[in-house]
Image (cartoon, rainbow, N blue to C red; front, side, top):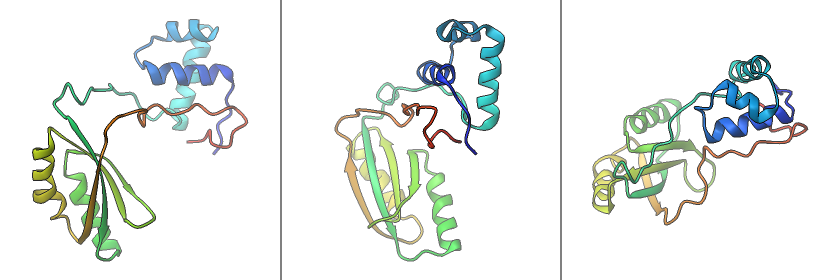
Length: 164
């Protein structure tokens, strides 16, 4: 379902993505709208699923997570029960902060945080290698973060990608 948007909607999305604590009054001022139309636009985008929620962006280093690893995992075979068992086991690991089923040489890609390399090594041997059906695990470490997943580009109104 395509969501019709205009410049004001894109401005609202960009502003909320940068600071979800802005008041309706502040957002209205930024877009040149009055408060009621601004509130209605935001409500419409929330109800349509375009705005999927609000959160606090935490600083991983301040929380003590100095290591970010991208972990590619291949499992021995894929069927519904094996995949479900694997997914449930991965979701139970709090250090896994992003988790995707992928195409290519691996079946799954995880983004994992750890305090340091020793903590990552412990997590790898005690949890990741012991996940159901794991055949192969490959780790790559992030050296520098350039852009975060929550910094999504706001598409132009005629773009087919502006849909929930």
